[in-house]
Every structure is written in C-alpha cells, then in structure tokens.
Image (cartoon, rainbow, N blue to C red; front, side, top):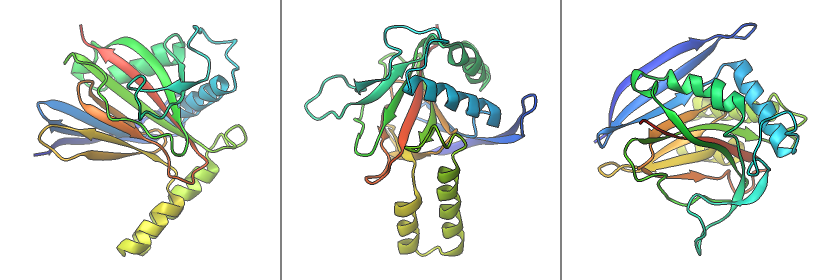
Length: 250
C-alpha cells in the first residue's frame, strides 16, 4: 500500500532571480522514502546547470576541474555489459564545483536526515530515442541513496537554451488535457507533444511507480530499490540528461 504522508511547496529565490515554486511529494514505501520534486532548482540555477551540461557535451571543459571520465562518451550502462543492454552517453561531474558543492548543498537541505549525505560519485547519463534503460539497483547497502535531476535538450540545444520548443510542447499538452479529457485525444496529444522520458521504480509491496521526468524535476530514493530510466519517445529528437548523485550516510 502506498501512503502519501507529506506534500509541500516552497518558494526558491536567488539574487536577481525570479521566484519559482518547488513542489515536493513524499511517499512512504517499504519502510523507506521516495521523494519527488518539481522545480527543484531556481530558474537561474537551472539555467546555469544547462549551460554547464552543454559545455561538457561540446567538450568545452577547460575551465572545469575534470578527470579522465569527464569526456562525453558513448557506452554507458547502469548494469555493465549484458546481452540485452542498450548503451548510451555519459560524462563524470564528480569534480565540478557547481555540482559537487553548490547543488549538493541544496540536496543536503531537503530534510533533517539528508544533511549527513556524502558523495560517492556524480555523473550525467544521456539518452536519445530508443536508448532504453535496464532495470537495476544502484547499491546493496541500505545507507546508500540516489538523487537524480532531469534536463531535456532539443537537437538545437545550443540555439535554444531557454527551451522554447520544449515549453511550447508542454503547454500544448496541458491545454489539451484541460479542454478535451477523452482518453483517445489525450493519448494522441501525449504521443505528439510529450518530449520527456520517464523514471520507473518498483517497491516490493507496491505496483511500479512511473514518474515523468520534466525539466528541473528530481527524485530521491534508496539505492537498493530497483528502477529504470526510460528514454524519450520513438520519434523524439531530444536528449534526455540525468544528473545522478550516488550518496551515502556514514
């Protein structure tokens, strides 16, 4: 049985930044918590995150602290080699101060129990259409946690840093859902306008939970939970980026 025991919103503000409402839902499942966020970062912080990701994708990393895994490379898999795995793109972010220090400070502020988080590694994995993920778990230890933050780029990402096309698709989908709620028409609108991927997670005594990974959405969960990151739809030209924090509490 799934129990939503907390839902809250907070206003995020930075200097010279527009106000953004962060929404958070907390689910109690199998004696652990699943936390789902909309608008995890402020508008300026998310824009900065996108700029940095674009620099990594375009191999403009000379101003960043990097390591041998910081290059944008093809071949990532959450399960290692497997006869049925589909590789996708990734690069390491563990030594980038914006992620290692600044964004991590936001993660530690989520709750009283998250303030003791420590980092194992940070990286970004990227999926295009048909680069499906595999069901897996991240760690066998119950003091380990995974935080994922999502960003979706169009093929013209360097020319559309403000996600105009993405936001138009999202607006069209929301309008269609409100004005025409017949199931066939909503399905048609989703197939046409939905440029997001999805996050799936399975708890022992609950059905599979499906979370739409819109821009600036995030998920926090125990790393022992089996889960899967789903790629964009079959005809999408988007790149789904997942910033993954592998964390633990000593």
